[in-house]
Length: 497
Image (cartoon, rainbow, N blue to C red):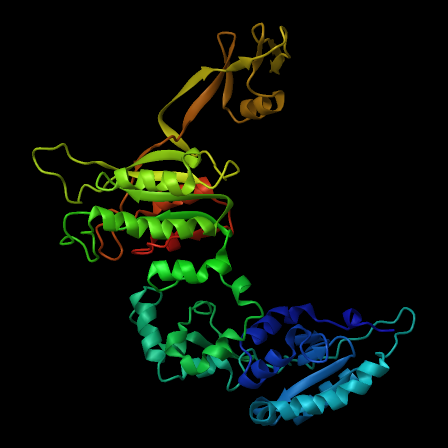
């Protein structure tokens, strides 16, 4: 018997089918919400399924049924629809047509109708037409110059309605304010029109949509995602951070790998900043403590937290972190460089040139990756050895010459590593000794090689964290696809990295 995975399939239509799934019209979205994930009769529905040289709206794998929702895009295409339906029936599929207006205005009635139609097929298990031995189901022939007429953007589809929405001007202004599009951008630039129909332009197909401008379409936009969380690569939350940490804790408990925060410092006044900094010490300590206690529960067992502060608050932060995370989980106090454009101390004190990052982990199983930096003056050093319980240890051979380690010592590198180093010019023989190129150094707790604040702030804030600093933080403590959190986001450097 012919199985669903044996159906003819034109792989050239994969990208078009993917675009159709993203840009479905309202009736398709409403219908999909009712049937996906086996919600309806426990049947397995596919959306925008490729069969032969056609892309059908919906296909039910279990019983070999195609469901087409006919709207304005089918007008004047009766002949095409007839040819497609004939082809589908010839390979053993049943085709059911539903009107677009019925789905929009009487979806419950549509589902009842389908239940009556599909129940006999499900219970009877009507098979797809069998293939004879050695036979393959042919693709429906395309006529010369013909393309599948289901264009990626159907008339009345969601993208088109967003672009015609009364609030699209506000969305464009937001794109311009964020630097995503320039001042010459026109709404017509988003859509391209060619012989195959309308489609999103390659340049603008990833423009972000802010649903606050499209509240009447918000549910429809969100319904395009089978699993919204898996489709997102980040969450930007506008809220008072204490409330947000509490509210979202059940969703993100023990899922975050790295936390980085640069809270407002407890200075004498707020005159130099656009946010409040003149907290009294007790108030500032309470502000941090309440949030850090909740944040700890967000971290997974391999997680760590970086808290940035200066001399005004480091004497408060360290005891707080010791209490909340445990003194045994203190990892480092890292020195970072201040911007010289920041306010300096008076003539009676030395200029404050550094600030601190306090690093704490959840436990001993935390992620940590050493960072290497280029040396200003590389040099050739002797190949090192390590202590050994054995008196005699294996030699190393370079260019046919044997090099024995000293008694009770072993070479620091394996033969394979040395061969690779010699091949790449990082190992040489000099005066009968093995020399290795020392051109990198391991970064410790002195990070003053980086600027702590951006020298050219994007948003004009003097305290905009430098991207290079955040990159080192995340590169040291996390891996690709890990969840990172910053609940004092400020100018948003963490999200940019």
